[in-house]
Length: 162
Image (cartoon, rainbow, N blue to C red; front, top):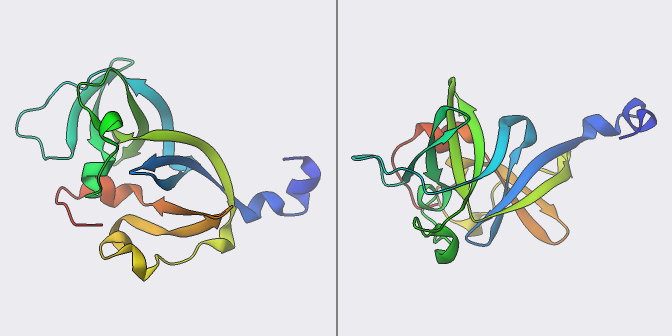
């Protein structure tokens, strides 16, 4: 952004999102909630963990719990990308209550911008359960971008059909 755009208020009217796909659905998290994006090798299995926990990885000496977002949202993941034996997993690092978590996604799409006032409520056609995990949707270039909330994705251990 140029200083002129910032002075004119354009910087305040746009929101940046880290975008990714899960089961071919475009999703995003506000960029300020994302600590890092990385590719991890096989997560280490954790006995008696909830079904959406793929395991843990060590990232720069810190143990990070990896949550499979497709399982968490009760979506069908891309089987190739969701294979726990796959060599590499796309992980988005977030922090909740001073604990760091990794969210496994199918593909990283990059950073996209949307007008803050273009956030709409979740369409009824998406089904029940989305209100719990999503703030709303943006329509960007003919695609629906679902904006997720970090806290319920991390805090809630149960699964609902999204």
